[in-house]
Length: 233
Image (cartoon, rainbow, N blue to C red; front, side, top):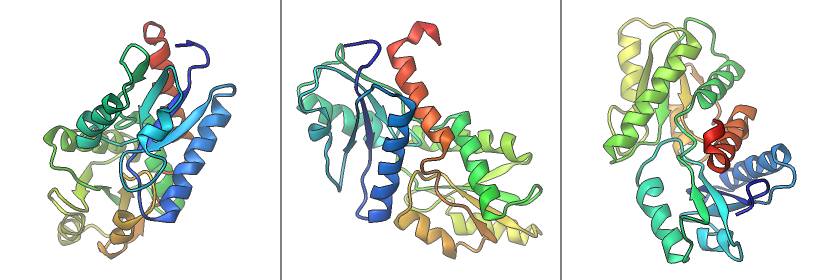
């Protein structure tokens, strides 16, 4: 695999929501700008095309970056199984850790909060999709601690589905404790059903998903470069 211009395959979940698909395309486009001369491809593990098999077709090697905010089932089980089914080998296809949690993404979440109207002192809830995977939930809580360093106070963590506590319960608890303003920081890469649900969680501010924020792009690029040159990082 060419250590300078190895292709980058960005893999994410996939959504029926066209806005989510467009947002993912924006991220891919921004990564291409950040890595001139590098072929950047997109693959989805579920729901949408191009699938992972399409993304790696014809490649002799690549760096595969899972664009997930925690290392749950899709990162640790589904993606490796799909790559193995394509016949790719670890010596030619290097799979990086998921992009989250990462301090860069916490910075992006803070920026999205500020864009939405969050002000210093507001209570903050980090809202993630949820998972049955305990390790993935631990990573979301780690992301909450990273965001706390960004916003200057403790950040509570809530989940939209699958795990507890639910976001609306966390917001209600903060309200009952006397918090005047509450802001939700979605730990979501793109818009869609999970983000839409947050509008009914009872918060005063709901930020946009992380999307193609420059720090998201920087996190993807960092994963790529570390995979190529691990001794240099």
